[in-house]
Length: 312
Length: 312
Image 1 (cartoon, one colour):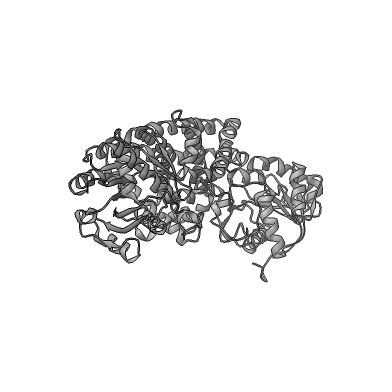
Image 2 (cartoon, rainbow over the protein chains, first blue to last red):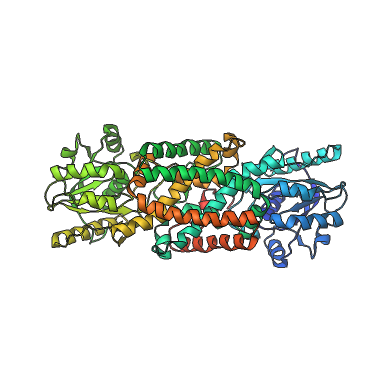
């Protein structure tokens, strides 16, 4: 991943070294992008585990100690924690530091980031990558490879901020991501479609399956290979992270949820009326879209996601 | 897979050697369960391809030729074709033959199967296994291993029919499946929950994502790793097969869809009102259920379904 244009940091502070923070730390370590990596988590055990795993060099006792001397501050926590963290960044950050986050919602982050002192350069970021697992143990250095990272820079046009945007871009490129820039509102609607709504639907389906009294829990599990199990992967994602996403991106989620409900009503009516041609037409769209996602390198072409390696 | 209790057929007729039919043929061949495997498809090219792939020994020119001398007839077509095929089985089947299907809906199949002569033994079957791919090329011998196969026997209590049920059970066990028996109505509601509703929701989400004008098709593809891509696997399934499932299992699907819509309305209201605790509680159910599915051997524990083998 490393090349001559890679950014280099003296000290990177990873605030919240969970799945995403730990993965970024590991990728930065692999790429030689920081001399020292320090971690802090409000749950001290998380930072200690990250240190024991070699994700970070040191676990700081508090936020101030973590960011002391840091020229890169990574806020990799649920979105709901960012407002308070911005106050702490404002209080303790070293002038000139680049501040990034990894949150799945950007409008709310932009508002919080705008409260931070101007001698700190907060570039909101969203690496569209993750797994259903959590914690530093779940981190791995290649998480961002060939995934997209979206930057939603603040409305600042000073040269130092522009240089900070370039540095953030170079950091994500150095860990293998494709980097895109857009405004926060557009990000929030685009991700409501490709990430937030899918998670909401998956959580809903899991809840609904548990609620049909005539079908036992054991049957749901046994016959899950009929399709249900695919939904449980993203429904197993961190509930705190996702609670915060829906609280912070309410308008966009409700908007795309309205589209989903309309589409569902159309298919429901087609089923009720026995309208085979309408169902066939709607169902045929899936193959085309999946092929495009596979062709774009965002999905595996192997059947069943390649999860069954037997027999192929 | 083979053992002393394996059934043995002289001639098996595979009607519709697509993903499931071809997989069963390959598994039977591997287990030495049939002396000869003959295939027929209304699309002659499919049977020719199955023969070229070594899935079947011979491609029959018509249905009557396929089932001539067959002591096992496998109807592995979309559910909508079964009624007509039952007429053909009735007309051309050899007395004493075991007839099975592999359809995802069983109430409608049971009605059609009951029209077949009583000297033919039709045991409706549903192997809960598949991939998003279609055609004989997609078949593989281990498709049914550790998956469940549900038998929904007809209301016949003659000894010959009971022996046929046991033979069907032994066939599925011999190709690696766990076998369960239940009545057709219960099957149809259980599978509406674990298979039909998930597919309907996945098709709906794919349609809805394509319909949000402010988010481009390219963006849906690029940022699909945020969760959307998980839905596209099952939304890429055969549209004809799924059209038939929804036409044939209307009542059960509409029933569980009602539960889904209720659950979705509850979460929608929680988002609108900013009710964090309600969202958290709903979202926390996913991890428990997924763990149970993994523990039951119906899913991989690897992050991202194991589809990203890099970095782990």
